[in-house]
Length: 215
Image (cartoon, rainbow, N blue to C red; front, side, top):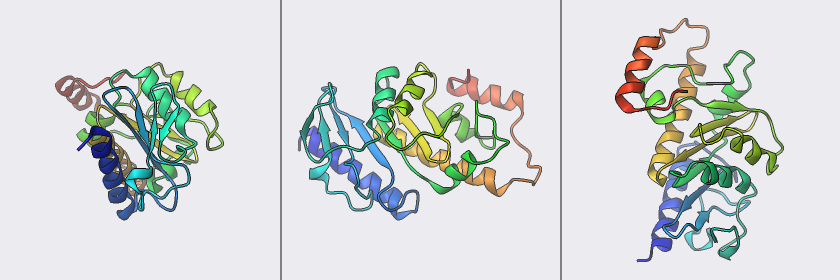
C-alpha cells in the first residue's frame, strides 16, 4: 500500500474517532499531514470529519498546488504556518472542541498560557498554549499570527473559534489535541473550586524531565 493511501486512511480513521466522541461536530475541524516528499494531505473544505472518504482527501504539492482529491479546507493558512515555522511538524489538527472554545471566551485567562497547570500531561504534550485573537474563519491573518510566534508554540487557541495543535506525527498531534481539550474541560469544571494546581517546582521538574519548551 502506498504512503498516500495509508496516510489518507489514517486521517479518516482519526477524524472519525474524534467526531464520534464529540470532539468536533458537523463540518467543523480539519487535519493535515505531511508526507515524506514534503507534500500534504488535508481534509477537504466543508467536509464532516465523521464521514470522510479517504480518496477525496486533498493532496497538495509542497508548493500548495492541488494534485488530487477535493479542494482543501479554507483554514490552510493555519496549517501552512505551522509547517513553515516548525520544521519538526508532521501533522496539524484544528477542532472546534467545546471546552477549549469555552475557555477562550473567559475574561480572566492568561493569553500567554491559557491552560492552568492541572496535570503533568498537559505540560508534557502541549507546553504553553497561546491565546490568539478572533479572526473570521479562513482569514489568512490567522496564519500570520501563528508565524509571528516564530515556531515557539506547538499549540494555540483561537478566541471564539477553537484550538490548533501541531505534532511530529499524526498520532502525536491527535493525542496532544485530546489532551488540550481534556485539560480545558478540567479547567472549566474546576472554576471557582480553588483547586490545587501544580506549583512552580513541580512544573520545573516536569519540564526538565521531558525536555519541554516552557519559554
